[in-house]
Length: 390
Image 1 (spheres, rainbow, N blue to C red):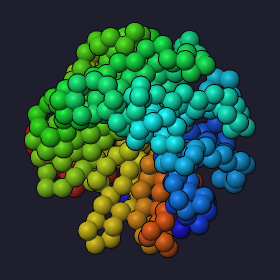
Image 2: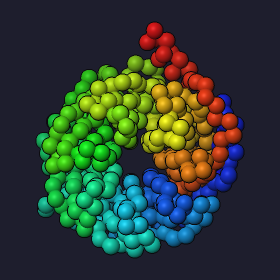
Image 3: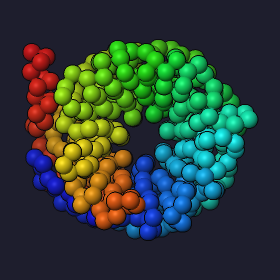
């Protein structure tokens, strides 16, 4: 079981649950549903062999309503889930069970009870060299936009892949972006102007190593602008959200400091950086705007002595840290997705291994913060960063 350890903030754990069976299970994506429950996706290894894509529905208390496993004899996983306008769910990930080759991008659409309505498998025509989906969003025409990576098409090793389908999963168009090295799309959002913004990482462009990559394309997938952020070492963005005056993206950075750090960047509508904030932690995996105009970041903190701990960070509207919440476990734990609930509570999903290092557990928890405050409780690394700007 993962337990919350308060840092600079009073908190109360409402409930914490592990989901799954005796073998490896994990959660990669979480969303609150219209009935105030939660939909989750990830992977489950029910037989202890290969994993299946896993879709799980729980109620407001985190209690099991239903779960569905989809897949075959290969490795199958869901990386992102979204509730659709018709009350169902759309999931993207990768499959090693269907088609020829290593893995293919997989889009799966279900009804409100998780019963499959259709699925779409995309990759190399004869065999896939390695293709997958990391993020999906519903579009105004009832279709879907998916981003991920492909080694079957494009110009380099991995190319950022952007896929548009109609409401039934039929391919309308797909575009690749990248150079001679690895380039990956981690998050795609349908924007208010009808286009799309994609965040991820690029080793083909930028200052060195992997850099954060942000692209804006129109409704046909034609590039409008792109920009990179980073230094001589590795950076990556894992989620982007649209704001009224631009976009915010979260990820990790290794440049300019002795250790990895979580990074939050806000840009305007043309991709020009407005500000950058840095926080103690190894990586930020999800980002959500909060009711007060701030941001909620989920991620992890790595330690050579203590392993990995799940981490939540709450900021104000300018990205200044208000509080951080570490969830310590007997074994490793990471927070892969977190949201602020409708009652301004906080729900976090992830992966932990409290008692069986060789087999992870899927983990879901809910807690409330008694005194969030309005001051800046900046981490040591953020103080250093702010001092450098003076």
